[in-house]
Length: 443
Image 1 (cartoon, rainbow, N blue to C red):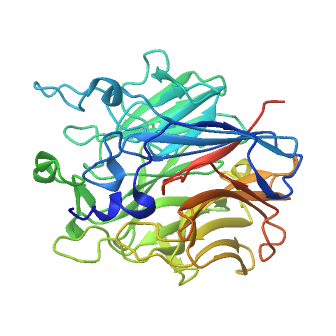
Image 2: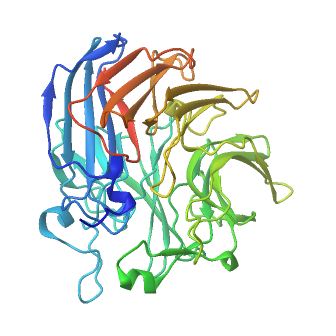
């Protein structure tokens, strides 16, 4: 029997069943304040095969919590047109089908809509039971794909996001939707090339784009057996700054050292500067390199708007990924960032999993370790009350290699070293995936 590719083996292997289970067993005590859904999206190839981990169809895994009980688990594929009809990104005439894609990267809520996201297609709306409603194009106004990491402004309720393309300019378009979900702005950015732009940053006054040297490669795209991107150091690297109150103004660009960033932790305004906190790779997908995914570490960039330069500082030397904050502090000087230590990519060996809680003001780092063979996914923050940046819990799916099963683990951020406050035992394994959120019931 042939050996499965690394991204289809172990806990990267897809699950084959959609389940609905009720009355889940819990070790410990679930906080009674938590009533809502914890949802997380990730690639789960419907045909049990895909050319790359990033390419499998999206599957959302959800756990329902109510008043100290874990009442249900559901997992559902996101039924995009690619899933249901075999639709492709481009037809034989080169026309783009924005409904075609995987919707496998994130799941967010805005203006009452739960949206499954992947940056190469339109978002897909889901019901409360995780069934697929269909593509969401903001009443026909959205004419690009939507990136997987939109930002909701905690002050205005606006949703900021972008779409990027590969074959023809504009390769980047910045979008904004109001708190009611109406698309109010679509601004092309003409000076950006065909690069892979996964994330961006938002502050109270600015939008920040990262134009980095992972570029579209038409030959790889035509081959179809890997991601259509490669490292090109000659492209350069820069940060683009746009004032929110002048969304059609010129973008200011600041050169930085070549690198790649999948994920921004946060950004905020600091007088005449912007502070940007990211998980940074020194390079990515270099041709003929066995090191596809070098270690990524937490960095801070300070953009001096008056001097026109960027100061770059590495904050820690631990290999980490999937940074998250209390999302009610997006664009503000959030004190804490949460990341994971895990086998974040199929080319890495399994390592003892941990959650890290960085104090961005003092530099202290608190850690919660899971023990040998227990590997966490991204941890979302669930607040205990209305005080942003206050008490709360981290929620993460944890894979147990010895049992080949998964749990939802809840950790109190005020005592990271303590045992989890609760561990919810799931009826099936949750494969490694990408991003999700704690979505409390509306009050």
